Image 1 (cartoon, rainbow, N blue to C red):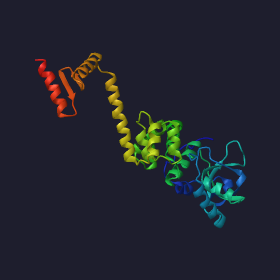
Image 2 (image 1 turned 90 degrees about the vertical axis):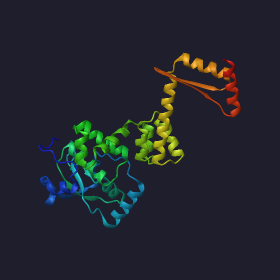
Image 3 (image 1 turned 90 degrees about the horizontal axis):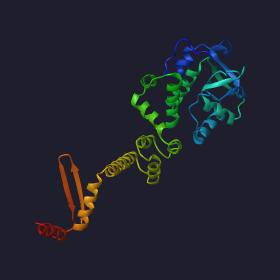
Image 4 (image 1 turned 180 degrees about the vertical axis):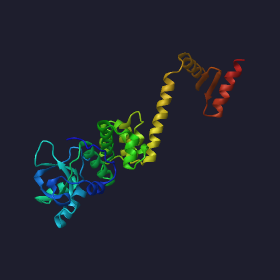
Length: 288
């Protein structure tokens, strides 16, 4: 299907598309028609993968009582004459099937792949129907397949660039952690904290087990960074300095540490009581 010659603004909302677009001739008056359930197929660009049972049950009950009040948005299905692909309203179509309806109201639009993805993404974001990972995957497709920049995407969706960037970073997490985020065991705030972690999966399991809030999770990641830096620093210490520390520790019977730099350094002797301090002082005086 050919792309429209003129780019439509992303993020204008479905009402703008429904009001400004002209239906193709078979759509009938005002672009609205009734389609059989079996003529309609889920959108290939639908970013949402999880349709919650509780919210779906509520919608099914409403459809049984009142029917489908808002038309779904469809386009001709490529390669299948007489069939249609959902652009927006997949939940209503699914609910109509569960309610055993044979037809649903629809509005027909002849749109390209890029706009199909944009509409599906905008609809779900506006209704807060996407998990953070589904949202991130939608952004990534718009950037990778349709050459949107993060700045343009954020502006078009009415979001900050930092929100788009931070959401995209969630895709760098291991699949196991993404699954925890997708099924609600972790929040987006928890996941953002884990992006920079050395072992995000282990920390994610700890956060869930201890029921940490986001602030506590951020503190856990900072602690991990501090431990990692200490291990790294210890791993690059001069072997002669380490050997000298051990020799002094054995001689004094206390822990000794040496911090050596280009302009000298410090020698630290750790004691636990005044008696230990007196013993060290005696040994030092005996050396004079």
